[in-house]
Length: 149
Image (tube, rainbow, N blue to C red; front, side):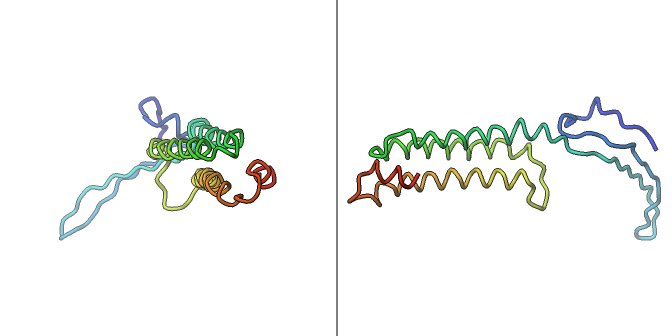
């Protein structure tokens, strides 16, 4: 057992060492030859605060801003759609930006599910903003918006 010095460990803000380092030396045989083999393992845990403050919180803010769609007059659907698509593009650009910060694992994490739900919330709000004026031809647009939203 050896100790792990994390001063030179680049992602130390994302990972916390939880134990020592286990090193081993062995031999590997191949094609009738013997090669030295060295291995090391270290236990680490993710620091969730990093992901909450740098990924989840900004995403939640974008989704919260989507509710400003309902501040626009229902009789002005283009204004609502403009805000909706601006937020969708912002969310997509942010997702691309933070993709390198999110751990690459073969399963869907809680953070992945959170990002997807927020993205689909924005899509649903954009669809409602686009369809609301189309549905209410014979009904006053403001009255319909009040009943639906």
